[in-house]
Length: 194
Image (cartoon, rainbow, N blue to C red; front, top):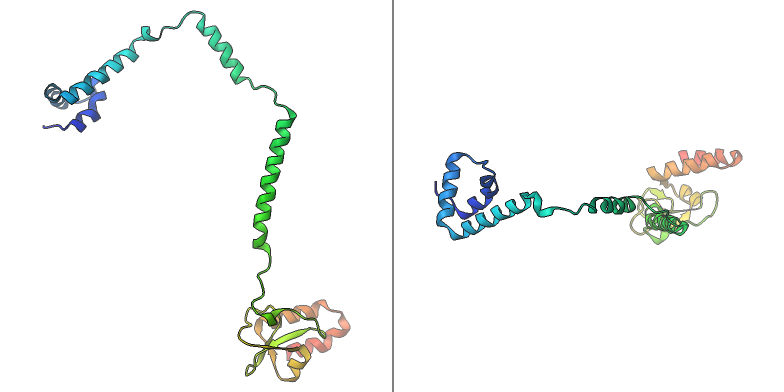
C-alpha cells in the first residue's frame, strides 16, 4: 500500500504505541525510512513521548507538596466578600430587570389608530361612529374593519339613516350596553339589536 505523508501523520501516535495492524506498521516503517519529512515528524513525536513519559523529568522537591497544598487551600477557600459586592450585584440585577421591563413595554401598548376618524369622541350614549357613503354599516372608532374615507356621525344619527354596526362593532356596542346603568339599557340595547 502506498501511503501519503498525511496518512502517516494521522497514525504516528498509534504507530508509536504499537496500536496499528502489522501490514500498516510495515507500510509506515517503509514510508518513514524513505521520506525525510515523515522521519522528522516521527523523531519529534517519539522524543516528546519519551520526555513526558519519564517521571524523573518532573521530580519535585520534598518541601514542594506542603507548600502546594497550602496555596491550593488558600485559593479554594473563598474569602468573605464585602457587603458592597452584594449591594453592587443586587443593583446590577435590578438594573437588568428594569431594562428588560422597559424594552418589553412597547409590546403591551395598544397599536396606534389607523385613521384620523378612528379617534374617539364622546357624544351621546355611544359617541361618534364612522360611516362610509354607499355602505350599509357603521364602525366605532378603532375598529380594524374601518378603511377608506369615512365621515363621523353620532350613533343615533347612524341608526336614523339606516346604518347597522359591523360584526366587530356590534359585539363592542353590546358590551357597552351591559356595562351602562339599567335605565338607559333597554332603548339602546334594542337599537343595537335592530
